[in-house]
Length: 528
Ligand code: NAP
Image (cartoon, rainbow, N blue to C red; front, side, top):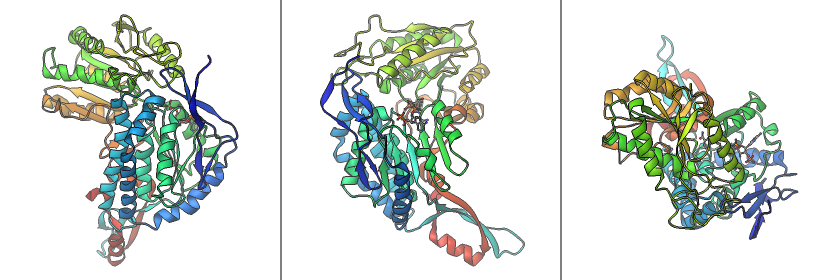
């Protein structure tokens, strides 16, 4: 298929070893998902990745560690302020390269700025310390003078951050904020298909001279053999599909610390008490629709499985379908559009195939009658109709519980009783998030033990927070993000607790006087 090339299309440069550089080849195209227009290219062939990592370790690390936590926090605040002054430019790139509506772009871009500001403020409280401590000294023996304390010292390597295509801004800064605050230099690798926004943001920060030399690098294009040059003290924080996460884990030796944020079959659960007409029912249906359509369903935390009491399955399907019928799909340049395309035609095809696979066990309960996206090129665009399925009663739901369809798609799964509902929610194989809607607070509290072991985050919605909660799919910097099993087993953010990933936790043993000296130089992140 021939694609138009935008007149201002350019090859994206990487910032490595303190220099902007182009790969030997133009590399992979980045396109506008509304019509396939090529916007840029990203190629990394021939770039000196070993040298880039060494520069970050040898120059960026020492420069960052000369600063205190509070000083590094101040740099994060300056980055947030700078990014805030150019929001319109970032929104425009997000619209063109990711097909984002304004609401979608806000999640990514304003979410990034909010997260940077959060860590700027929280980090300032760590003051002039150069390391962390976990609590206070404890006595270790009969002799009261012999004591112990866990201390965190920043790792002396480089943090490689590999990000998914769906959050080019937030993915970059939610990781970089914590790493830079910890004093660990960053080499960030955005997903190629949407690398433009990340590259422009890094460009702005480098041009402004906010960070010390070597503190921030960016690789645009394929990672090539980047991971082969990592060694003890280095870290990898990865966000992306479970398959890539597994491949990265296998490739890295035991010397390199790894955090994996992978894919997830998140569930929303309508409580047994929440009949049609109840507030919980309405809040539930609204949240499912929001999650299916926000960013065209391309959020790792999006609701994929919609668990409802069997007797309310028809009513729930009807309510969700009726709300989906009001969604206006099309080119987000048109202000009436409320849902844009998925990221590119390959992703569209993957979603279409996913719907076909789900259809082996589930029936399509809602899809628009005639799919005609506004201001769109159907053939070269990447538009997918919002699609709700219902699991067939004869099916064991194997596919629904195992296949992540990364688009505006969810499946209603009827359950018999509470235990059945909990069992189904747990079948995701480890999930990032589940939300539960009920007026029965005892039932909501029960989910902590019923769903906690297989989930990273639980949003428990009784009607008192129906309008005020931040949403099933929204990740907040003050709480831990990550989930067990196929979700990767990783943990990011979580307020200042997230700093521990970038520190070596050392058990220090010594006299009370020595440990008091250590305490004086260390900040306790749990005191935020
Ligand atoms: P992906 O294909 O797994 O790619 C993710 C990143 O890994 C990209 O930057 C990619 O680079 C890079 N990559 C691919 N192969 C690699 C390798 N062998 N070594 C090192 N890096 C490699 O995922 P995606 O399609 O971009 O993102 C969608 C997926 O991410 C979904 O499954 C979603 O659930 C998941 N996700 C999870 C979270 C979370 O927090 N848990 C958040 C967002 C998204 P290239 O682009 O250059 O190939």
